[in-house]
Length: 348
Image 1 (cartoon, rainbow, N blue to C red):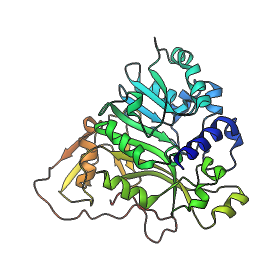
Image 2 (spheres, rainbow, N blue to C red; image 1 turned 60 degrees about the horizontal axis):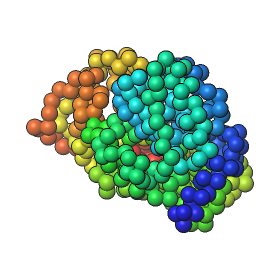
Image 3 (cartoon, rainbow, N blue to C red; image 1 turned 120 degrees about the horizontal axis):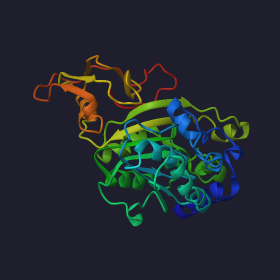
């Protein structure tokens, strides 16, 4: 089954699709907000890279200068080249993909893109291989600051291996920041075997509760949702096949810091000091934490750790520690239970 799935994905993205216009649904079409500054960077990226790129979100976090970033399933390298500008000439971006035709396009433009960005030499590196086995590509333990992925993990037949590899290579305080397709129920084996549904990023979608259980077992019990939208597949035949299953494009972040499985109240306060260049007036951690510059905000212990034990620590003042405990942090769920699109996330 595993090898069959790899063949399906390689064939779909290497032979069946010649560009994003060939997709049969909206699932792998790029969506999500992108900043004005990033739109300007995209103008510097070669048209072929953009035309043959597939994604369902915009998993580009803030504060990347000088960092090492890994893009899982980089395809033609659109996000790699966008991030290569954001990390600067001293930073590094690695792209991994298993599809020959995709990685060939990405590699073809390395020198051209470096010149466009004004760099003496490329700060990018593309590796052909499997996201389930990054060790064989020479990617060492604790060697990467940020891992991103854009609508690719759903295509893996061995998702737990992917996440184990991600958390192996992430440095302490590092971050997984990815966009992908999730479902509101488990997908049947019959649908998983459908090559079109799998290639369209649907039948490999993770049931959101299974994702939560998986990363909790791996030691990361609190993930945060940045963006979520219910997908309109825009294909009656495929909608008939999938029946009552709803699919969502979601952008999620998971930090490699100490986390509790429930948000606890230690009386801590966080204040954003407005020093992130791309966002001087506010900082968005997730869909329910928007920090206004210079305005103190009560936070749970997990949120405090996400701010003080990561690359964001120089941009926040954290008042208080964990010497006193006041019980469970009083906060609403990410989405109210009355919301028909309700899907869980971090508890606060």
